[in-house]
Length: 239
Image (cartoon, rainbow, N blue to C red; front, top):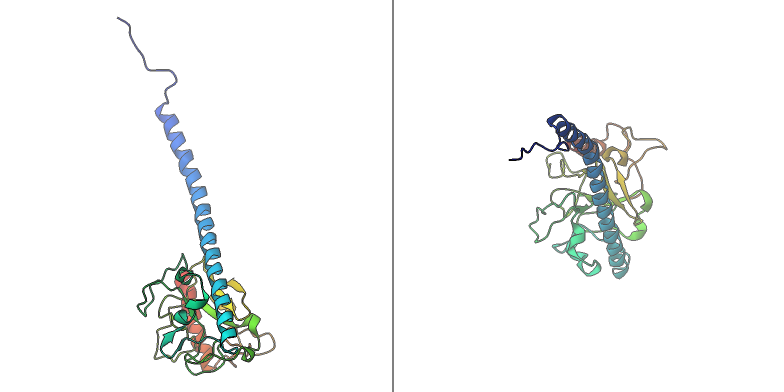
């Protein structure tokens, strides 16, 4: 009778452990890269959505004597007003932020228009009444539509302190960035605090929440304080 022994080519326990360790090291290196690539792809898809929304808003404006869209009109929400001008309802959902709209629509909505409860200088004016296109004095720096996570029929960054619907609604989940659609149609990824100067006033002041680039005034200005509260919470939430 022949005696059989284990093949000399079989792996030893030490060799198997070395292979497993190498695989674990490669996974630790590659998985974050894959995650970043996935997030970049989702951010690009979100930017494409916003560009299509921007085109829809411009077409709407042309049909309504250069009157911009508002948060709602006659009880019809902005996303419904845009339906004739966009290809699909799917463009209202960011793949990284598929928010189920608080207004109980049948499809996810991840975006909201930059309006104002008091009809001041927000890019899309008063909640119920959009401005004329000619009223937007600085379209390249005026935020028109933002990413948000609640009540997406409008976004009011300077709402009174007693109304906290928007305090935690600004989305910045693309590696601490959010996508913003501006009134000239371009889309840009920004950190929340990059949309406004931390110290307002002077020729270098930045305020992308106003349609004419006018700042909120001094550091003690009430609207500036409200705006900074919302932006700071977004930074803390997604840091």
